[in-house]
Image (tube, rainbow, N blue to C red; front, side, top):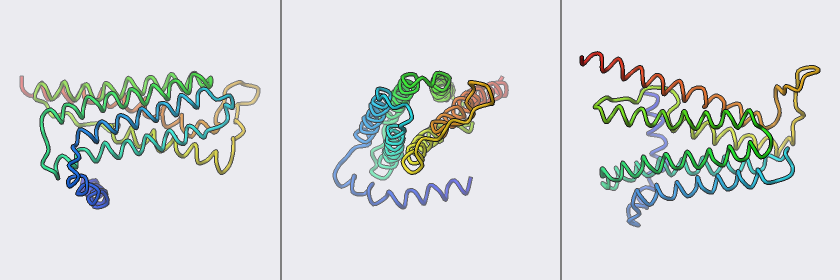
Length: 232
């Protein structure tokens, strides 16, 4: 927990000058939240454009899509910090942030699923959709629990972890393609099953998010059952 606090302090020390500037410019947290949604929309468009290209081995759009997701994630961090530093916190602001975060994730996964389906990565697109389900359920379980008066922030794959995992892996996939080119698929002998190819740098972490996000949702459900049994 202490290491996490130190990490947060380091990040805050980096972005605080920007936060102070935004306060002076009278930029509101809701503006930042809205812009974060816009950037996730841009990321989705980039993935859609990548899905429409003919060269299946070209990971350029994947890389730029991942980079845009990470920048959008940075704005997601800024809005909360801006609300606290600028003394602009409000109940509606918290609600607005939560709602737009869900839209942001669904729009992001829409673009990713479109790309994977369009480029015939059917199994990976299925895991991307499962990751979307898990992401929504992680957030819903917490919101429903807090509505019942239960603190429910347990679990590994929370929103920051999901954004960093997906954005970083997509960007690294694009960087790998830029410097190395398309990697020859590694297959099991005399089998159509592919063990590794360039897109795997992106799709494997997406699969991890799919599994861990749903596990996190189940963990939160079990946590709530335990907490409720204590009250009965």
